Image 1: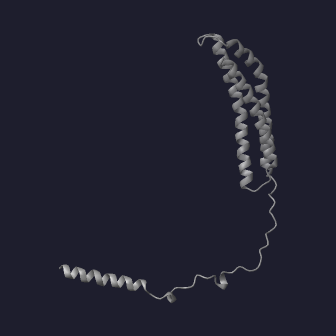
Image 2: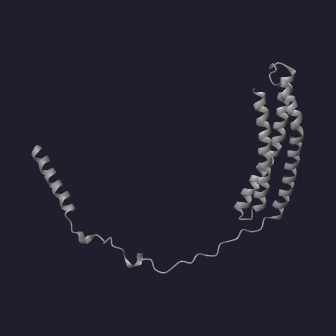
Image 3: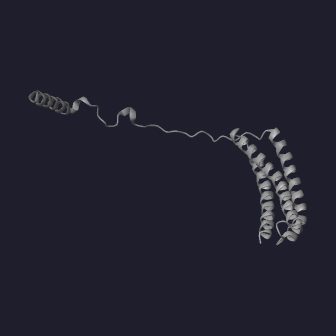
Length: 167
């Protein structure tokens, strides 16, 4: 039995070694072939221009701009009264009416800010739509920048009020 295993392993080894000793002429060359060489030149096409912004989007822009401007004006009109209310609640006990009134005033301002933020979200969607439709989006970007300015100003007011109230 042992002799048969030894014979089998020697024959198997010889067969494997014979496979490794084959000639190199049976494999293709790895040199670059003529068909793989690049020749000629490539002319880039003229750059494409985006299409004009659709009229329906332009109409939506005007509406969103007007809504966000109205919302911002309402926020800025409510801010002085909220400042006074928050100032009266600074240092007051949590159970006091002045503390509760200050919380309500800040919540009212947050609500007004969210209306402006919704307009910003709508503009973001219009910007993406114009981008995907390969339309000119400069007007949408200008409206977004305008509304971002409103939101930043409102955020500064809210941060100031929260900072004052936190003392």
